[in-house]
Amino acid sequence: MNLFSKIFLSTVLVLSLPGIPIVLAGYFIINEIIYDLHKSNFINEISHIQRYINNAQATLEETGVQDIEFYINDSKNQILNQVNEYRYGKTGHIDIVNHDNHLLTHKHYNKDELLNVSFIKNIFKSDETEGNMEYTLKGKNYFSVFKKSLTWNWVIIFEIEKNEIFQQRNNYIKFSSVAIIITFFIMIIVAYFLAKSNVTRMNSVLDYLKNIEHGHLDTNSPRISQKYKIGIIQNGIKSMVQRMIQANSKLKYEIKQRKTAEIAMLKAKENAEEANKFIMGSIEYAEVIQRSLLPNMEQVTTYLPNNFFLWMPRDVVSGDMVYAEQVKNGFIIAVIDCTGHGVPGAFMTMIVSTNLRRIIREQTSHSPAEILQQLSFLVKTSLQQDTEYAKSDDGLDIAICLVQDNTLTFAGARLPLYYINNGELTIVKGDKQSLGYKKSDIKFKFANHTIKLESGMVCYLSTDGFLDQLGGKKRFQFGRKRFKNLLLENYQRSFSEQSQIILQAFNDHKDDNDRQDDVTVVGFLISEK
Image (cartoon, rainbow, N blue to C red; front, side):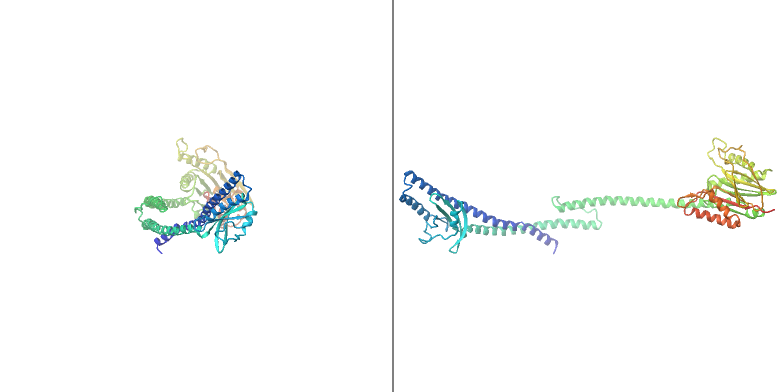
């Protein structure tokens, strides 16, 4: 079944449905109307008879013969004769019954026949003065209206066959049937044109939607009045399409912009990768240079056979440095923690290590305290941080030891010396003064700490990167206490084992946390003489 047939049948059904209850309601309403009209007319006819009776009685009373039977019967007969001659339609007539249930008008019946209707007695007994009834007499159905005449104690009854009453209804039904048939055909014609009009509008909208489905958003939309729902729907579709066109244009523009941005980003990425490659190449070569500044371990083992140097930059290059050099009757060893880490820190280590080597090799005195004072002066003046216009403010912390003639002399700038002798760990703290900074006092007198060497004494130097490392879920620092216990538990092991254990302890504590700083730890054993 095509779309037109569906809409046509639906329209016919919609138009027909209201007619069915209207026809049924009309049938019952007409019945009631016919009953009411005839009842009203019959009451009027009976009322005429009632007035005749009242007028006759009034005349008898005026002449003073109201008690003389002859005159009464004469008046009654005159009225009864008039009633016998009365006709209404084909079957309508009036009967009068007295209180003994005798039919006084008998032209339509045998002379002595009684009106054998059971409700007559009930009429006299009831308090009602008028009413209507339906009954069957001699095989015919009657509709009647009655009224009591109290003057002579009569009941006036108007009766008519029901067939005659409903002849009007039948005529109405015939007329209505013809009207319904004509109306039905008119509805079919109206339904046809309505369906055709709706299908035309719907097809135009469907064609419009098909064009949109195939991507033809610029298709002209059909013009349909807003008084139709399909017109409202079409207008909504049109608005939606316009928004789609706007969104599509915006999307094309954004795609174009994105492609332009992607090309620019790719170009920038290539440039960044090239620059990064260049920078990393430079940093990697800087690492080579920085490592060349570290002590030569083969030379160190000639005068310090038992040792470990743990040097761990946070980045490729480091701000920490280890310095070791042999001097007359002994050696100097130091750990240095310069400002920052990475490339800036590495630059500082070059400046510091160069000046430190210069001091040690040019000066006849190798006092650690004097070395620190001279180093602070050289770093500060090299960076021009002794002037007001200097933009930098960099420096270092350092722990330095001179081992000579069975004596260890230590001086420190914020970094300590740890040594263990006979199972007891001692910490020798450095002075609370950093080197080279703007606020560093170049005249500050650092203190030398002299320690008499004993066989088997183990010494350790460390920058603060190890102790300050955060670790665990609560991100606590490794701390000095844990570091001391780590040294005491392992100082009797070989220095190779100590190096591995200390490194493992550091990594276990750090876990997944980031490195905070460069880390440097140096350990060495004072050999027996």
